Image (tube, rainbow, N blue to C red; front, side):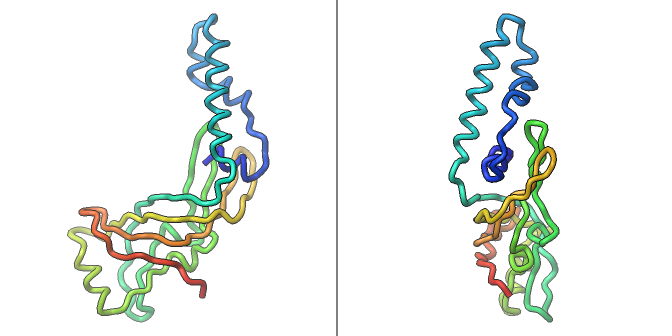
Length: 174
């Protein structure tokens, strides 16, 4: 994500700093440092090149399904809320992933008749796994990192225990 952030923001990656602080370089014996620097630089450059042109992200998150709200006919997923973000830390930088359409994506509308079957799928708690397809829509630079904004296009909800498919959701703007 750090590589992707730099590519999307158009901010040159601080390769020299990253290479100098890599433990393979700092821990190398004097005569080996130059070759280690070149090795690390080549790996980092390959990583930066690999993210060029990326517009979509697949991501898996753990979450807890809310209680069913019969008044609204829906469950909600806190991990997708507009205030939520997914942090990524690497290379002395922090990059966050935020959901641009989180207000709509966090809602899983379920008819009342199906809601009980969903609730009965859990043995203990309501822990779920979300498999998300995201479309990158924006980047917001900040000091020592920034935020990548992506819209949730669709996701699958599965029970954490047993990996049972509970539903497939395509968020709809309200």
